[in-house]
Image (tube, rainbow over all chains, first blue to last red):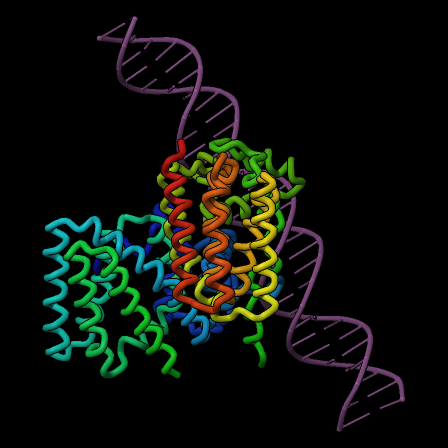
Length: 218
Length: 218
DNA sequence: GCAGACAATTTTGTTCACAATCCACGGAGG
DNA sequence: CCTCCGTGGATTGTGAACAAAATTGTCTGC
């Protein structure tokens, strides 16, 4: 479903060309390491070379592409070590957001969180991995919005875009949902209880578990 | 091909124009809210308008300038609330870096940290505020380097550039060194002891103190 | 057959001129 | 006197042409 694609793009009036290229990078349209020639992109996206140029510069700054002087750009490959480092930062920032979310939780928020939790349990019980994966991003997004911390949200969005690939492979690993489900439920409980410290701890424990799983990969 | 040998320094040949403009922004050369007209900057910095354009785009992405379509750019004013939000993120990320630093501490590192601590005590005792301020950034830098967490370092650098102004005003406040000195010493002790959890707690306590001070400002 | 240098091609980087856009100012009408 | 609407000036955004740089392919000399 083309569900709310809003949370990932905090930049409102940003370059549309950059957004499209980014989309195609994170969706795997471009293979990692693939060369990105300005003229070709200009043709593919029906945009001027200048626009493509600006877009590439922005994406380089986001860490998605790598540019060498007079050599062109290629989509950046993120090693497992780098993915771990990124996720470590994500762990602490998302912990902060979780604590904030616990502080700000309204009854409506609590209801929605509990609903997500119930749906998650059902999805895991039924073995519907893709549904569970969708609920996963919905949960994280919901907590991010509840946190009302624009700066953290921006940082997280940028970090997340970098290692979607690793993140995705991880979600499909057999047995992974059984591990992450109780962690997710713990997060929901702590946030609903309005306990910032517990929420931060639960979020960090969950992301730490993601890190451990990442390191076992490959 | 050994193409994967570009690990540590993605910021090599970055735009020199952007660096100069950023320098002048954080050094207060441009007043907050001041308009930045491309043609004028092009003249002042002896650079082409295209270069200035790229630089402004990059600085916008860093959160230092604000651009409105067809209206031009101005240096962004960061409210106290935003400065607090930025520092909250900084708190958790710097906590992570502190923990990593404690893990990686070598005897040489410990010696240098202790030296910085001693110099700090002397500076505060002697009332030399500017010296203390310099030691302050030196300490934070040292810990950042020790953390060996490139991603966190990059995030921190970007966050810090945003509210240099607030940070600077804070350092000059009378009585502030007396508050922050013991916090700094606690950080040094925890890192030197190689205790990640204590280091993270000490760093977070220190930055939390900065936040409290920020909120009393205005 | 190999090493080195030279030329050709490809790709990026820069500059220029033009088009599109937006705000401010001023005049006409109510 | 106030409001609404056009016009003008300034500023940004875009596209095309030009210049610079680096890689690749080729050719000659040993």
